[in-house]
Length: 139
Image 1 (cartoon, one colour):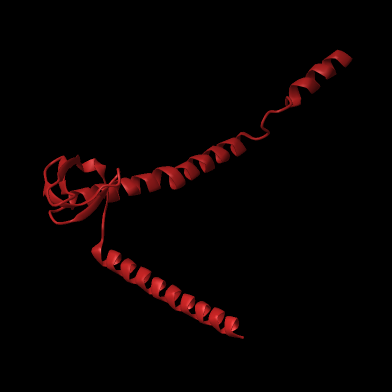
Image 2 (tube, rainbow, N blue to C red):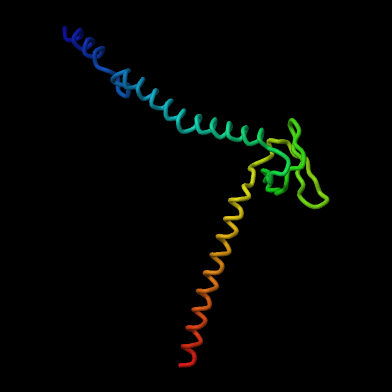
C-alpha cells in the first residue's frame, strides 16, 4: 500500500525545472515573436523601402555621397549604375546600391550658416577674453 501511494505521488508531482502552465510558454513565445518583428524586422523593411525609393528617384544633377565616402554630382543614371562627377575631369561609375544618401542642398546651406554663426560667437567670446586679460595685465 505504501508503495502504491509513493508511485501516485511521484506521477502527480511535476519534475523540477518544468514549466507549470503551457499557456505561459505560448504567451512568452508570442511576446518574443512580436518584439522581434516590431523592433528588428519592421524597421529594417522600412529602411529598405526608403532606400529603394531614394535610388529610383535619382536624377542628373543630384549631389550624392557613396558608401565609400565619395562626394559628387550625378551625371548619368542607368538601370543599375550611376555616373558621378567628382572633379572637373573625373567621373566615376558606381552601382546604384553604392549610393548612401542624397545631399539636400538647403540643409547643407543651413548647416554652413550655423557653423559660421558658431564661429562668430566664438570669435566674440575670444575677443572678450583677450580684452579682460589685457585689462588685468595693465592693473
